[in-house]
Length: 366
Image (tube, rainbow, N blue to C red; front, top):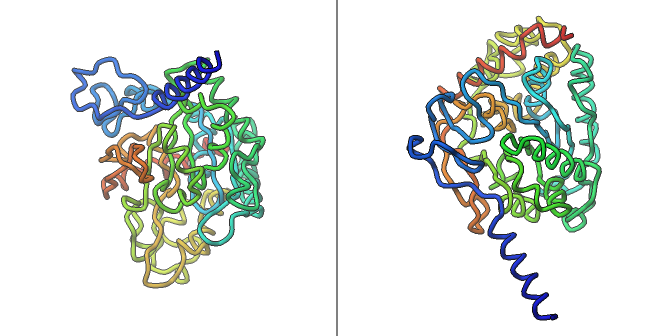
């Protein structure tokens, strides 16, 4: 009897690993694949927007994306995905299911970053002060907090349990419309949620910023997520095109002059934001002028984009013009890795995001 039980356990483990949520091979002829399933992907499916098509995420022309979004980031104000996301929610074009802050890092600057929790609260509060209704913005929930990488493994948190609850409820409600998860930092909270309930891996799509390099440095979490979840990987090797100066930006609004110190808050296209007189948009310009990766007046790479915002793809399939299945963690497990982001893609993103951010209805919503 004991041997039978051991055998059953082994079979269960093997089946669990075999059925782990994975991507399927690229569909190049949609006529031969008229009934896709979760995990199918490819480009330019007839009847769908031009660009990268992912079944269950991108939708038919004229249809609205209904996938709930879980936004999980470390420093909320180091990028501008949060402002765009809040504006989308205010226009009722996005359902934000959870706002999670995971304040840990593994880049050699120490693991525990409790001060980062405040950036999440401040981000949400700035949106509310800008006129966005609280009903569109769920409260901030804190994910993994730990003093070391080892202490962070399988660390229970309110956010880890919230992941499990939201993903399972949506799958029960509509399995063909999975939760979209955007990971802009370390995946510690999602990995811990998987340890609570491994079945969630089959029920969502994870957009993960640079799982291969700096956001993947917490190896326990990044390898677990890459192995078990369907991950869209957006990495440092195919990034928003670097610019020599701020007046060369293609995605973000351009100021008149090259260097931050030579631009005031109303310089060039920045005035489009400041003229709205909304704290959320003013904060964006403040970041352009003061945050290091945008404002350093040195002969170096300048950030230009919504650098944690791969999940924009669900609303804008043409954001990417190339992708392939790639082993991003060096252990044989594949993610759907974005391989091409061109100036044409940049222009599409800028037009889309600026029209959303500058829409007066965002800030006078009913």
